[in-house]
Every structure is written in structure tokens, then in C-alpha cells.
Length: 295
Ligand SMILES: Nc1nc2c(ncn2[C@@H]2O[C@H](COP(=O)(O)OP(=O)(O)OP(=O)(O)O)[C@@H](O)[C@H]2O)c(=O)[nH]1
Ligand SMILES: [Mg+2]
Image 1: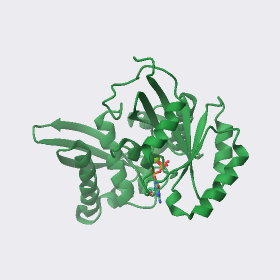
Image 2: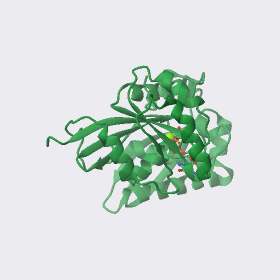
Image 3: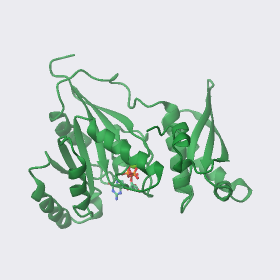
Image 4: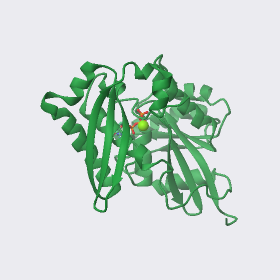
């Protein structure tokens, strides 16, 4: 370690759909985290690593802060709170058109008073005057946050500028991980997320929220990788919708997921999907644990 080396964990939090996963994919330059126009997409913490000069930023993507009675949602909220309680710095994401209500809620949830930076997201959606008004509103809390930075994935915010600011607040510490890697999560877990993303995109209503994915087997051959995955749903009727007439919908889900996985893996992928019903999995602790949602 050089005496200048910095490293730290940075939890990225905010309400569902705030743009957390999109911003992190943009920051690290790879599509690793699933993104959706539908809220409550991310279910688990995911480490995404960026290097900036002598500084390693271990971003932790989190599920949106959202309260609900369903057990899976309780798990998701706990994931966000755990990440917040166990990091060096928090990035709180606030979409530019949001009121400050969610931020005020976050201040209460940040019980350990971990230092935080506010990122105002999706600033491409408004005119400059609106953004300036929002920045002014936040001044009320200027003694609470370290910095306030407007960002936009669509407009292409300068990542290096944001990294520079983040690194200034990270401790002098040896790197936690190999500086070459982008995530500490297994490829299998990333594949699962990319298949879930495809389900979010290709189905509607309750289906995305009652489905999950288990990667059964991955076979790495010299010129192709074969992935066998199971889609879990809660009811027989949902299985029918996922599969669609003559299997058309399942084919679309598979095609879309395969494209994203191929882009990431940089090789040809064969993807085989099966659909099974597991009654009440979103409400049952044991079933959630089997799907990797342990709490
Ligand atoms: N206009 C605009 N839309 C954005 C921007 N960043 C993200 N989005 C959109 O916002 C939606 C939500 O993005 P996500 O990255 O999945 O949001 P999230 O905060 O991770 O959501 P959860 O995982 O559900 O908590 C998607 O439709 C994105 O395309 C941006 O800079 N500008
Ligand atoms: Mg997300």
C-alpha cells in the first residue's frame, strides 16, 4: 500500500426507481446491475467497484427504501439499512422531481449518522431553473450533507468528477479487492439479475414481483457458455403468462436476457429457461433463503 492509497465502501441508497443501479452501471462502464422502469427491481446488495487514481470505491447497490408488509420487501428494506449501517460513506439519490420528503425520511433512518453526499438524479428531465430551485430547497439541510451533486446518466455526467469528490471523503486504507475486478459477486448471480431484468421488461402487473430466478447450471465450453435457469412464480396462472401462447413470451424473455449476458460475457451464450410454481415464496422465510434472500 502506498501512503496515499484510499479505499472504502459507499452505499448507494434512495427510493425505488431513483436511478441507483443505472448510475452504478454507468460509473463502472458495464451492465452488471439490473435496471427497470418498474420500481423495486433490485432485491439484494451488489458490490460494484470503481478505481480512481489511488482510490478504490466499493459501491454497494441496494434495493429502494420502501416499506411493505410482504416478507420479500422486508428483506429488501433490511438490505438497504444494512448497507447504510456498514459503510464509510452514503450516496443518497434523489430524483430531481421528488420533494424532500424521502430525504427527510432517509435522515431519520441514518441512525449512525454516516456522512453522506446527495446526488440529484435524472436532471436531464428538467430545465435548469427547476434544478436550481431544487438545489435551493436542499440548502435547508446544508449542515447535514457533505456535498450536493446533480447527475444524469442520460446526459452523461462526468464520472471522474464524482469519483474525485467521493475519494476525498474515503479513508487512507489498502484496497479491499483486486483493482482489476468490477464486482465481488459471482457471474451466476449477475446472470440471475439479467434474467430477472428481462422478466421485468417483458411482463407486466404483478408478474415481475412474484417471480425470481435460480441458475441451475453453467457449462463453460471453449466457444459457448450454456446456462440453465429456473424461473420461479407463485401461481399456475403466472406460469401461463410467463410462458405465453406457444411459448412466445418465454422465448422473448430468453432472447432478451441472452443478449445482455452475451454483451457482458463477451462470448456466445446458450440459455435454457424452465418455469416452475413455488406457492407463496415471497412470504416464506425458508423459500426466500433458498433463493439467496437470507435474513
Ligand atoms: N431520464 C432519466 N432516466 C433515468 C436516469 N437514470 C435512470 N433512469 C431511469 O430510471 C428508471 C429506474 O432506474 P434504476 O436504475 O433501475 O433505479 P433504481 O434506483 O436502481 O431502482 P430500484 O432497484 O427499483 O430501487 C429506469 O427506467 C432508468 O432508465 C437518468 O439519468 N435520466
Ligand atoms: Mg436498482
